[in-house]
Image (tube, rainbow, N blue to C red; front, top):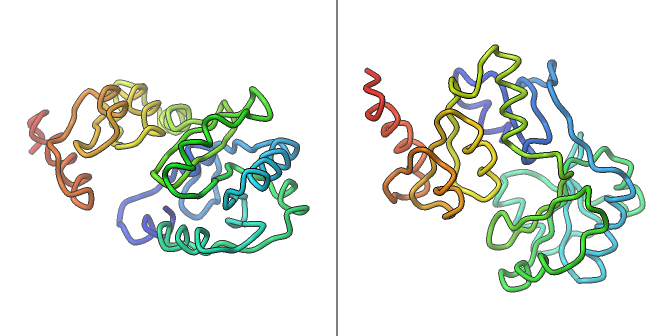
Length: 218
């Protein structure tokens, strides 16, 4: 996300890693960090290895993987970010925000049936080929509330836009949640406004346009 935000004028703050990180763009001010415990990271690494998933981990300093393969290269293209191969034994101690398992869609759906190593973790499918794990306390709704409090705003003064399962918490928290028409049904159910179906590459702009028209903003 950060590399895209750097190109857009006017953006001051960034929420990333499913809400595990809230900071200004240059990271000089960090409002919130939510890390997974090393033992949970180690357990998920082992579970992913046993069930033959490709694995990457978002850490404080880099995105890492214990083993590079075609799925890791796929993710690099998807996220426009480099993934660093790192020994599995070192990863649990790297201050990890979240872990991602990658595979074909059918096998990713199976990941939901694999027991979590702790009830302090949350797992969810975020895209057809991605299943993500994070602390149970980590979500975008909480992250937005942290940033809003810092800016002196209450929920009714906040607008959020999203299209996925992991956007539900912030769509519900904000006074005005806007879901993309092409998005997940649970996101649309959580939102106050839903845009007409559109090309996903243009959906955010369509959401802003609909927001302006709904509230008669000149």
